[in-house]
Length: 232
Image (cartoon, rainbow, N blue to C red; front, side, top):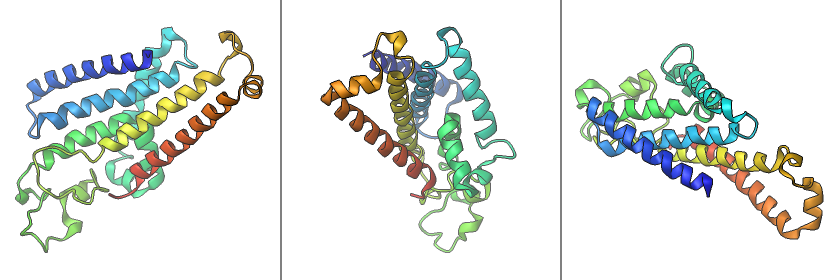
């Protein structure tokens, strides 16, 4: 219940932050895509905070979470060498590490691609249906790197770029499942709980809940990996 109310609260905060930012920035693409990227950024970042709170003292949680996102976003966000978007998309491993551990990467990429997809076709970022013979290797998105795994990256639209949204949601849900698992495994004695092995042997229903949770965690982890590294 606390997690649900906290998620709703931070989502409303991110909606407010996104609307204020949209008023100041006046994005070329639609406001829905712009504000939605803020909401999903908050979803993934708060998921890491839930995971860190298992092992990090409450007084240091905000600082640790902020430093984690700031450093990973700076190093693995795709905007700075050596891990530019081109470098990230060349390697499935780097792509996974960046997509899973640097939530700011998809946030920045979504805002960037959303605006560029609204540009006219003479810029090279978008192609109309008449440009059937335009060489794919000369498309500006593929030259620069953002959105490389999107099969329709060259399609012109001002509604926004939603390709990364399922990935951000799946990554956030996966991290929350890890947090839920570790919450029941770490320091059980301090929570006045018996050892997990003892509790499992005395409760058949608990065993099924554990199995279901672990299967769900594996499914979500595999889903996150596939969404990050596969072209779609």
